[in-house]
Image (cartoon, rainbow, N blue to C red; front, side, top):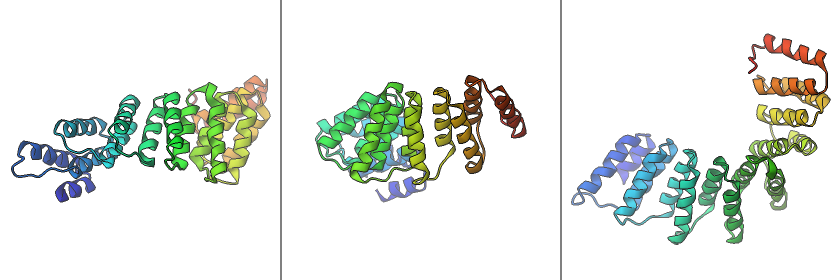
Length: 278
């Protein structure tokens, strides 16, 4: 265990994995326990080697080693980082069936994995289950749930419901929270709500490019070219470097509003700032 821990800390995952596999082939000299697979799988999760994590997890099950909470959490997290939400969901369900007590980390990884896989229903199912069984949830949990809803344009209302739960629990929203909530409203063509969230975010978090982009896009979709340009001007003062998305949204807003003169000025600005439009 000591050797595996040291190798994992040094991110020598390949060497740690080799030691782990060799130990199975020579059980006379190595005494295996639940700590061994959890160390290697955790290292795989940290280095985005989700296929290796699943391989070691399967090997653990085949050899009747006890599967503990850390092993499950690390494997689910590895799948989440690898974008394999179905595997993460299956592992999480298996975890509950094996009566391994899940915790906040377990639920967060499963919800995040489903969100990244655009499976908002599954993500919200896990979130609801988390609340029902009284597992403590945090800002990471809510961010993952809001992001899952943000993937589907019609679920902006559910995203805001989860967002409001923060106020009820006095959890502090961070930049990720606001970005996801504003993006959900933007995709749902709810520009007024997007702007309300943007205004609320200004006094609570440091504004970033994604927040501005989503807010400008929301105004563009709502044909609010003046508000879009106000946000664009504010972004120039706050953000170090604007992106193609920023300019495209502002240009589109001017186009919809018939403001060709403003659009031309923006187009010239893209050349001055070396921004390539797609």
